[in-house]
Length: 476
Image 1 (spheres, rainbow, N blue to C red):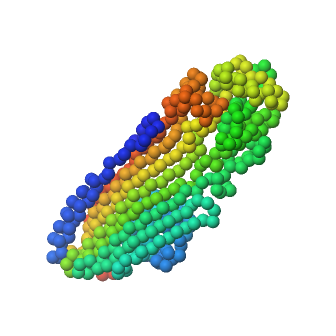
Image 2 (cartoon, one colour):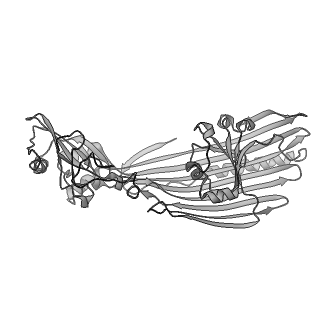
């Protein structure tokens, strides 16, 4: 369930931590353990279902050479390709258990804990993941070969500014009890944003005194006034206010959209404000346990806990709107109109609209925070000769929030403009009335999102002499 709230701009609200899923998981795990212990008197360990067919396999050395820091990055950059799916989503499994699909955020899967990546044939997956597996799957096998600590650091520093990434991980593996193996680890990732001004495809470019047609990633607002001269029956435009490059503008440019007479407008290089990619930092902890339950069954426990933060920036809000000018605004328009070629004079009988960037309100910054918990436990064994079972429970929860600053309330800002309190000619004005107009019209958006899942599965397998048949599966 999503909820969106709009508040006056100001400090964000805190969020409560998550306690329910962990308690539910522990209770379910206890129930599963009781079931497993009761079954050990008549069961023999080992799944009866055939192993999934592996199309391709990428080992630990390949993962390290790739330079990727998360599984999501490995897919996004094309290090691992899966064009054979026709561009459709593919199932993601962890230790043979369905986890997500390629449509989800896979940055929560740090590669520091992965021993190998398997590409599985769809026909061999049976009912393990339903319709999500009809095109095959990636199976991430977590590391189980460690005997002691493995400490790694990875740093990536592009030749151009921005995009630096640092990652550190500590993973421990070893024996646990009689015949068991435990792997635990923590992974920290810090990825810097790339500012749009540092890359050719996203930065703003223009020629001083040139035209809008020659500019790239430059908008008409800026501060451009359009005037329909009722006496001459033609559309004119002027650069409104100083349009000073020192204040973030391009300076006057000719022929804004809709104009071909050489009239000027004030452009804004929004490409120098926005970010090309977001910043991202993440803290991740993993646990993987394999342990025999006596001589008759085997317990598998997997846990993945992730805390993530990301941020992205857009240029200040922009709008194009009609305005009924007061004497001060009309004087500012005519100060530019008298220097136009040919010169003209706007009157209150003309129709006026303004393309305006609300730079006094500031950039629009989006910040996202997430907490994700994924835990599962399974017991595999045999109830009798030729009759096996696979019982498991799993719980997952995502709790996140998105906060956006700063937006402009269209209705309120029009009221402030009409009342003469907001200065259209100088959005950076420090006049008290102007600053109060900015405060009253500023908005912050907050959206809470998330999801949860708690399920249990019991599958029975019957083995025939030449093949196997799964005769029953219950999932709830």
